Length: 272
Image (cartoon, rainbow, N blue to C red; front, side, top):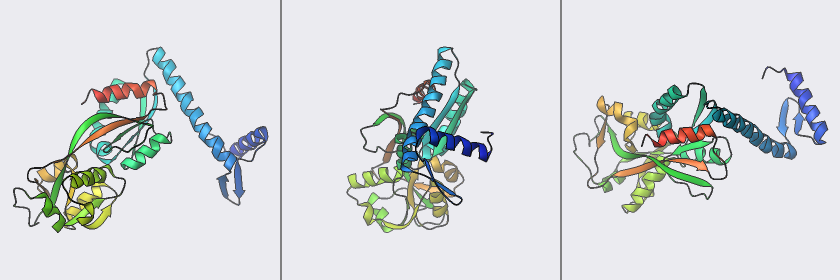
């Protein structure tokens, strides 16, 4: 912000004097928000957001597409689907700036509801009355095994054979895990019956664990296309069943989307 620390301190002191409230507790070098500071902080975030949206609306009125948009996505859409699409969108509107935050499904939902992202793309539905869902793209979870695994030469396996193998699981809150557990339950298999030897926090960690022969897993086919082509990993079809899921575009019903958010949503919907 091109402000020195003493200048910032003067602004804060002036604001506290104006409000007649202490906004920060100062303990040595540590500074923390007071309860009043926490209340003001939430309103300040909304004010800054509305300022940006007002600028976008006026630019839109003048026929220009400018501004900033913070987008959140779970691992698979964030790492494997959105980057090329956002590149195309940026070509259409070179003056915009998009920030992409990646986390698990629960993290993206919380970020949306807290106002930290305006638009989200996730791989499982989380029940919340404020969330508005629209279908984006379909995905398939596949069984993947490492080279040398006893299933390597098999053409398919029965779904119940999964419980006999060491299994790599995504962390709680992951859309992949939520979708997988839901599908297993439909097939009469409890996730607790799997021999889970590790829970990891990313799709990359799942792939690396499988390559290291720690176990097998169900993973998005989009995430292992290169490894399968190079024969580092192998897809093993499951007899007479598939693990399919849908990625959803999510928005907060209580928040009016900015013009830039509307443009991106329209663009993404055209990619279906």
